[in-house]
Image (cartoon, rainbow, N blue to C red; front, side, top):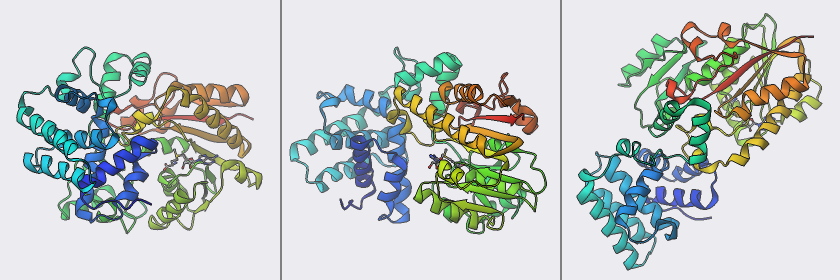
Length: 450
Ligand SMILES: C[S@@+](CC[C@H](N)C(=O)[O-])C[C@H]1O[C@@H](n2cnc3c(N)ncnc32)[C@H](O)[C@@H]1O
């Protein structure tokens, strides 16, 4: 196993090189890499990695005007070092120019790169630094022909077709800036005003979310979430407003109800549903991935839901084979392309391909069909994704109803708070996109009609 060097810029270069060669998800690569770093350096590593992924096309456009050598012929280390250097010069005004250039060039020295290469990178970064006030801004480049939107063209074209030119551009613009940190207040432990006051006591300013009545938004917080006041005590869960609203489509939950979260992940929605349960209700949360299952268990414990929530490590098919008692409501928050959460996971735009959508759709329909066998007659089935793609959303629902015609769509608006009703479209789907100020999401409420 490679031993990663300790300077934050060198770690950022290594992680981006690993990403460029594997196209694995950036978050686990980043989390593993920072294990060896002191807390103080972690924020900068994240800013550099995520920033470069959010501005990759723009940075490359700038680099092309300075480098005679074609970018596509550069080794990943050279290109990533240049991108990280230019990102600091053009986006991080708090970093002095000399530090941005020298510390970045030093990563090449530490990696024993040849002197000519170090000189080449140094020369480009110094030239960018000298001319930076005359360079076109990212905003100006969005008006260029063709525009630089920092997304692959196939994805932008899909959004143009689905949402129109203006919204497609607005989605790209939102995906290119760092999103706020959004918390869901755990009302079993505290309240929104109390948590807000607790955060403010530590100098952390939070504002109420507009759409979800339990959302608190922290616009800038570079530190670790686990260090926030109230985290260890289970006063909140990190969760975007869109995801908070999606869980509400399962409600209202009747007395003695049994709920199933069929794709529980880390338990963001399981814990919300557990909070919504009546005192005699219960929820089973199924998750096959061992790392996620461990975090799911930890989260349920931290948030105080142990008595009512049962985590099960299994995939949904294996769990269904155990013939559990039927459920009153089931949530299938399915694996998907994740094109709605690109602002939080910027690598997704570069990692996905159009041909990925059909396999996701097949899995989604399959999971819904299994869920249908586990539901009580008259029960509620909520289907959700964090995708913006129709194949994974309305098309999945259409295919499912075609195969299971005893299910019917219920309009989502009646189950959402007043402020969020405008996020429901004419068909009755809850479907916000990043231009609405939250993650892109999709949720449908389906009723079993025996
Ligand atoms: C979108 S994530 C769920 C996020 C979660 N509901 C939350 O709010 O934090 C989808 C999850 O489905 C899980 N998954 C994938 N295939 C599955 C299957 N066959 N059965 C059950 N879960 C599955 C994945 O491991 C992943 O954690």
